[in-house]
Image: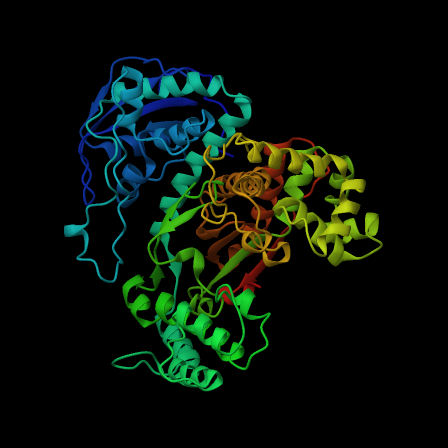
Length: 580
């Protein structure tokens, strides 16, 4: 694979293991122009004078062909789309901006400015300027085309290639001073590789049938109306009003629904689906259906289709590390929240298939690997971790084993979890103490880190805002209550696991990207621990082998020799919705 965890140790000249700093000489988004290149030693020192190149894309293409190069640049999201439009794909890079975010977090300054001007200001002892706000991409169906496309907001300013080299050298010094430099270098390399892949996936786009989307919307909602909601939502609104014995209630208004329940003698804290399912009232069933369909209509209805589906593709902007745990986010189109019903419109091109790989039980397996609990690791060597736990310690009760393990990771300490957690504590004390220690550190206001070194925010932050919401099996922050210190403890106990799981998935992606080089297969979608590859039908066998090999390699790179297995559920389908 091409995410070496340390800078190449060879000569500084361009060739095998070369490092080259890149200065964008004012490259526009629709055309490519000149720039400057500077060969570097592994520690960031200059390997000679900078080279002026009249065509930056052509120069990078030529040097890629001459052997492995790691390109050092300010921000992948800023430059790499330009290179891809020019037909240039690079294998490796060092993204200064993403690396700075990781280093600032490791130093306890999570969220500090990370763009190149901020890095240079810190080096020079000057006031640190804020990062520019991220640009929200225009829906492609509503844009004016490349004539008015300004691309990502520039963050590197007018920095010279020598400044890029200086920033890289400083980062190498700080990388060496981290708690586990080898692990942290792997994190930096994987994060930079993920940035390359994120741009590539956004350019490739997810195949999408606009005609099928229209059919399923009409099936679910009825025909679109010139004004107001479609027919099925109007029918459900009438049913809900009748169930409450009122007129004019708007089901999309939580305040009105809560008042209606109160008028019927039912107190509900909110209108979330898991709360409503516990309520006995004739309005609940149509309300739940309304909420689901209303979300589809507003978030992925006809207006969304017209705005985001162009030329048979849905293209969003992926943001690697966009969540504090290292999980990806997206800008534009709600790509990570596409409901399963709408996925019926995601159909492979003729002669193609999707290979969809999902890492089941990933976080519990990660806990087994990072905690050093030999007994839990032995259970995690099985295909079904919960079944193995049940046979080992829970009298064959798989559901109880699952409740115990999820409760330990998410901090549920009441209800049915109490006896299950007692068994877990007795049978797997090392794993149990690992998450308990992370919780205690968080409650005391301390920092915790993932296996590779990603660090949680220092301030008390709501875990739900951080993207660490537990599944329903483990309860919710609202139902558990407690002071802010305990809430932060629940956040940190899960952070150490979820952030490491995100690292495993990121390394898998980087390995898979390398393995598929030269194939017609394209990675087109990624969400948490699921990856979607679009490929010609004759390549599905090769892609499946590559996916399984990448999962095994990710486990080895992160954890070395371990009994823990990271199996994947892999499906070959024509329609994405059929994958699971």
